[in-house]
Image (cartoon, rainbow, N blue to C red; front, side, top):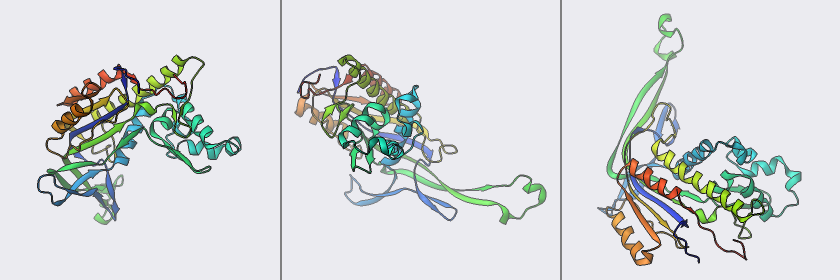
Length: 324
């Protein structure tokens, strides 16, 4: 393992965010009623099973991916699929160009995808034939409301056809529907692994851009910055389900950003736990106080400031088989 105080091996974002009057993620619609997500968790205080409100990791990851696409000015840095946010990502490209890929090995396909596409590199993808995958470098858990800190309402709405009132239309001609609105303090957990940027997970080698090592370093640094900027954007303007009419009111965001400058995973304690920040600090001190950094934030602006500090660093890189 190499030490470089300016390199970032792993980043964890652990915090409590307060969203008011949102409907970012829902279970589905039955008839004309949309049901919110419900989760069963253990109340950290009482140790009993309780029901809470939730937003899936799939939704949060989708929001981050959307921000990656939005923040990249040069869409040619995405593959054909990700340029249009096709969810199957590079597998779509493979299926559309079967003759070009029919004789390629899985490590060659992964190398092509990682080299060609920022989204496939950061957010991963599955391959049907030959069977394989590229794991995501960005992970999200459920955003779950702290017990006793959330509220739900169901609101009735109606759509009216043009001129309906003038024609004296019956109420039966209206489209009546019921949508949820939720408010709560949510525990957020997410992990980003910059050391994997540009790494072919099949042969465990970094792909190369250009002849000089600086060319590769520049691409990896750009992707590192893009992922961090997407984090900043998604938590300062969160756009999920129903955000056209239920754009969340962001009230507060507090927590910790933990990162390591050597090849050591950072501690990750759920913000559901009352003293999670203190616990994380103690673990970081015990593992390696010099190379695991715990940065507390108490507001959205402080969160943004820490992200800005991380943007001045670079992604960690292993020395693999003489690769530098």
